[in-house]
Image (cartoon, rainbow, N blue to C red; front, side, top):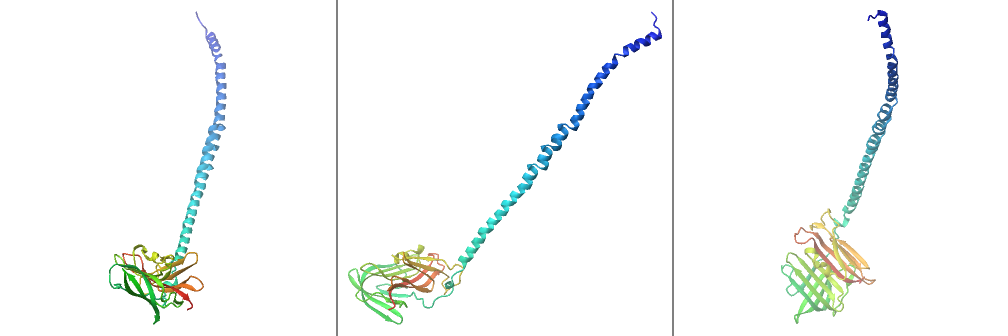
Length: 318
């Protein structure tokens, strides 16, 4: 069969026509896709959402906790405690220094001795000798034989019973400016004597009324571990010492001076720095006249303090 050129061209046109509508439909749908793609890229979450205005940009990077909370406010909190810490540190240091300066300001008495203070004493009794380095201890009953005053010193002469034998004794010390001693001949007294040189240099003499054991006189000289023996010697008065002169000068070749503290509970108290004197009231007519001699650290490794103290009961104004 022969096909003419005109017939061939007509068939070709018929076959080509259906392809046009299909191509148009596919072109229209991708248009919607392109619309979605454009909206997605322009207004969608990827552009305006988290990437541009979301938490990643404004919340965390620009305005979020990482910038203002952690760095800006965090630095404020960090600087806050540091500032407060420095203030607190400087506060106590300042107070401590003030207190230290106040406590460190030693009383003038630490460097200025009172020439009237005299705590020296002399005891004559059996083998007592302050130059003998041995232990010596007696506690005996005596009777006062005489009380005499000469050369600004008062001497009490006694007769004591020692193991059934009468023994003479005498105790001598400075007259107190407050008044005469408060005992007379004929008074029954108790004489207690202690000396200890076993890693110490302690001497204590007590004179007490035999009737009620009231203090008439107490004299001490030397040092002892833990202040042993001294507080007991002054009972019922309370006796101790205070280191109020740390860093102060020397009042007389005794090392660093210290202070004795003496009190009659509920009544009166007396504080005397090395080489000073004073009185502790008893009542309107009586007092304890007290002289502190050397009271201080003399460098001994065996005891903290050397203490020379003289106390006697006196009649005020006599």
